[in-house]
Length: 328
Image 1 (cartoon, one colour):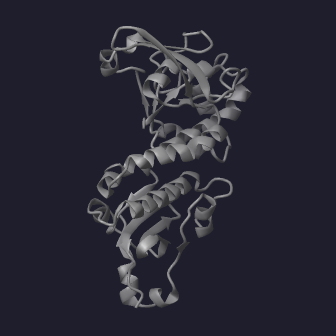
Image 2: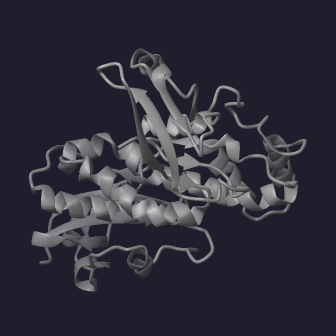
Image 3: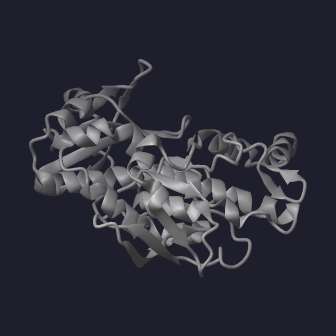
């Protein structure tokens, strides 16, 4: 599975600055949600400012103008939008030296007979989804069916049609998010692989306590690991929306609303009132503070995933992934 999206600059410009202002918050949310499932880089054409500021959104209205507007305005979501913008990782050009060595110059892509869309060519080559804006046809359709022409090993031109995911809105992205998650998770087959990819796959989570060692030396099998991946994915998704409308604070019920299929709860008073049992659930946070990781998800075969949701930083810390801790 690819780890990138391709920025569809062909979907610009908007008809007015107001339309751009309305669409940009959802575009930034889309980028954040994409990061949460492993699409952590956006490929950008060389003709575009890699830092986005000189990107023309509408006639003589640039990304920089929008950025300055939200910085100086009273928009209560401005800080979150700025943080989302700064978190976007971009890469240029569309094609690397290795792609050129693999004869990308003999790879052509057309939409309705028009081969003048380099973003579509990049998306088809990298097997990556497009990320763009809801402006006009054909960019209001997903998937986009394109024609690919390339030379086979015998030197003959082969033609085929393929569908490209076109994320022109957050709603379209959400329709495909489960499919993308399944493809991503299928590539993670060991605890060590999960741990090695944790920053890319679970950017909202921090692993501490016993969890890093438990993942690096995972021995519980793939079935339990799949449940761990599912749980971490939902926790990470919650971190991506924490503080937004409908998600002002952490509650166990929110995880179920986001699709968690396992029971989640806190510890009983009999555990928390017992110093010895409570101590087994205490882990150090990276900055040197010890907390009780009483929130836990119940996995099969008696396994538990203990975590601590920090309301101040809106981060979830993963402290323990292993057999049920003692109850008496």
